[in-house]
Image 1 (cartoon, helix red, strand yellow):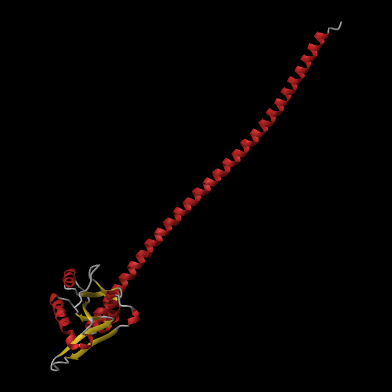
Image 2 (cartoon, rainbow, N blue to C red):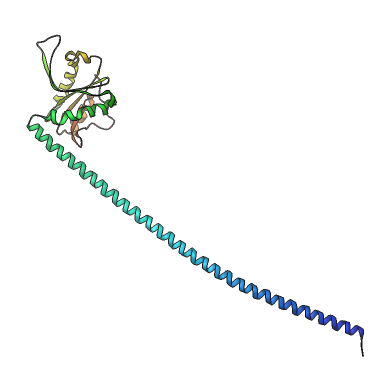
Length: 244
C-alpha cells in the first residue's frame, strides 16, 4: 500500500541523510587536509626555528669574533704605546749621551742647540716655513756706536717679524736667566738691522729642574733641554714667551 505522504517523508529523510553523510565526508576531507597543512606548517616552523637558532649562533659567533678582535686591537695598541714609550726613552737617552759628549767638547751650541733653534722658533711664533730661518752661531759683534765694545752671542735666529736670542749653559742657574734678559736688552745695539724685530729669548741646557723652569717662565724665557728631538721646550703647556 502506497502512502504518498509517508513516501515523501522517507525520501526527504533519505536525502537529508545523504546530505549529512556528504557533509561529514567533506568535513573529514577538510579536517584531513587541515591536519596535513598543520603538520606541514609545524615542520616549516620547526625548520624556521632551526634556521633562527643557527642564525643566532652565527650572530653570537660573530659577536665573539668582534670581541676577540677588539681584545687583539687593545693588546696591539698597548704594545704600540709601550714601543713608542721605549723608543722615546731611547731617543732621550741617546740625545743625553750626545749632549754629554758635546758638552765635554765644548760644542753644545753647534751640535745640539743649532739644529733645533729654527724648528723651535717656528713652533713658538708660528712663523711659516716659507719665510725661511736665518741662523748664526757663536757670533762676535762689535758695537756699531762704540767699537771698543764687543759681545759674543751663542745663537741668534730670525724668522718673519721675530728674532730669537739663545744662550747655552751646561748647567742652568737663576743668574743665567737674569743675564739673558740683560743681554736681550742690548741686542738691538749690536744688531741695528733687527731694530724692528720682536725679540724673544731662550736658554738651552742638558738638564733643568722644575723650579728654574718656573722662574724662567715668569720672566718669559723659553727653556730648552735634551729631549726626543735633540732640544725640546720644557716650559709648562700654554707658555707664551715674552716679547722684548
